[in-house]
Image (cartoon, rainbow, N blue to C red; front, side, top):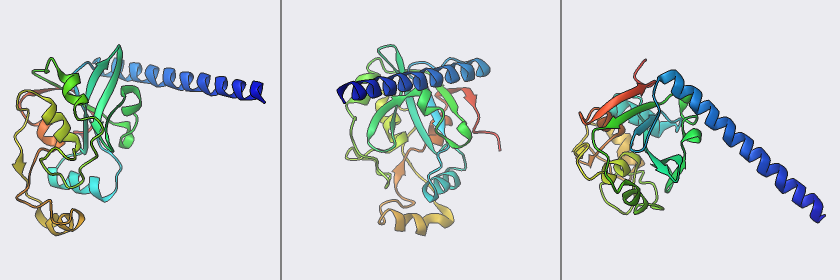
Length: 204
């Protein structure tokens, strides 16, 4: 029995290592196609398949940037810090395959805080904020990025929710309205402080 458990553990470990290696090789092929190697501090965007919430983000921001994270070099491994559930890092090679159609956009800020890792780690574990409030109790994806920077990438601002205002207010218990100040993923793309590296989300 002990021998069988040990053999099973080894098999799973080998499978995990093979899958991880395959994901890294797939990422390397994509970067070669883009002519870009993603590096520490780059902002990465995707269009998640999260139902009505993501559909509303797309409509309100008039874009397909429904989620954003930041690439961090963690002891030689590239990870993406994000606020998707709790604030936490995920391997970049896993992150790039998760969006709709596996499409990715990447933009490089004109400045990266020297203490970026510490700034992100200070927000680790905070729950996702589905009401999009500019406070520190809960964090949403573009809020995490904006607050991790030591310069202003994009100013929080009110957003015209248009014909979706009533539905959004109902979803958020009245906390997200056309007077709520927020930063969206699209704001980070359009901020003027980021340079496009690759954008598979800007095409129709």
